[in-house]
Amino acid sequence: RRAAAELMQRLERDGQRIARHFRLRYRSLEAERANVTSRYGICYSDGRIKIRLRHAVTGRPLKYSSLVNTLCHELAHLRHFNHGPLFQAFYLKLLCLVEPKSARASRLVKYLLNNRKHATYWNSTRDTAYCVEAFADFIKASGEDQPDMSVDIYVDGHKAKTVAINRDNLFTFDGSMVLLGQAVDAGKHRIELRKTGSGPLYFNAYLSYFSLEDFITRAGLEIKVDRRYYKLERTDASTKVVGSRGQALDQKLEKYRRVELPSGAALKSGDLVEIELEIESKNDYEYVIFEDMRAAGFEAVDLRSGYNGNDMGAYMELRDEKVAFFVRRLARGRHSLSYRLRAEIPGRFSALPAKGFAMYAPELRANSDEMKVGIGDR
Image (cartoon, rainbow, N blue to C red; front, side):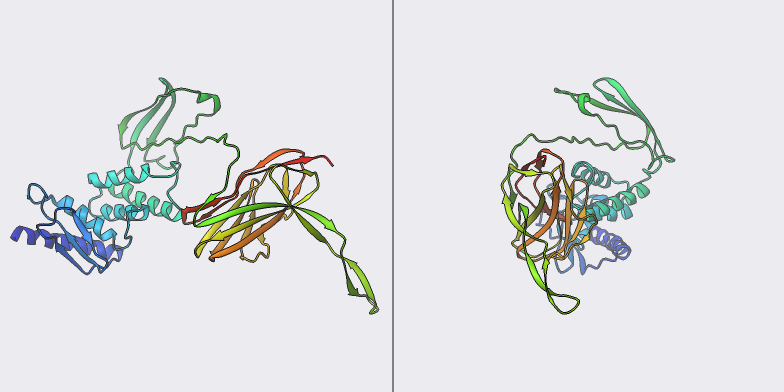
């Protein structure tokens, strides 16, 4: 009991130091009951933290480094009550304060690195910023900001690149090698990294490819996107206006009739087309992006990005390959966004599906059907 009390006092001191540094508040820190062997620790929603002090099988006291790791884990739950990237990054920041050179800290770095999407980012810009900040803390606290090494990269037994890494070029060295096209032919390939010198080496690899799938169909659960193409045909219309002398004058109006286009429809160069995104949302969401992939051969009628007066208050951004709408608040129900294109270059083109996704929760996403269209000379 005396040894357990001394361990808890030591953990309490470290817990208070961590809590002060990161502005955390916990209600109490207690030793777990002896008969609880299914977990190392637990953090309750009311701020109580319990930590198991003895090994579940041997009954021997656990090493203090293991207890501190558990303490940091449970303290991180005070801010993030899950095990996602935000929690893992915050957990790493806590470890960097008390045990920066522990095996758990380096393994946590490896875990975060291995769970990136496309080897370059995490679930969202927020997650990515947190992880990068945690890595910066780890590099500084662990001494990994002082490397002195040379790395040789071999592809199928042939040296393809040599890179020298030291404290002076840690953030500026050429840290990428790209294999394009015919350099990646069919079959197995072997890539080796050979290091000489001091310092850890982190590396990753990813593959970019395109799909030959035809035709891509719509998909989505919580939100759905349906894209429709309409040809705009000019109609004769006029209205009565008051002339300079008070007389009634007929003034022509710019009015169009919308004709829906099926996939594979034919247009003439110069035809005006309106694209409408019909959006269905089952819940209320914030910060949602809708991107319509524009078919080659079309150019946007609007020349400048901005608010185009749509009912959703979305900001429209015109890009070379797509038109993006940034929606701050997406209410439950059905909505629509639209913009206009002009057919210009003759040919047969495919418009990849329009996409919708939450900026800070990309797992919330949907896409429309693909659209194929032809443009002929007038």
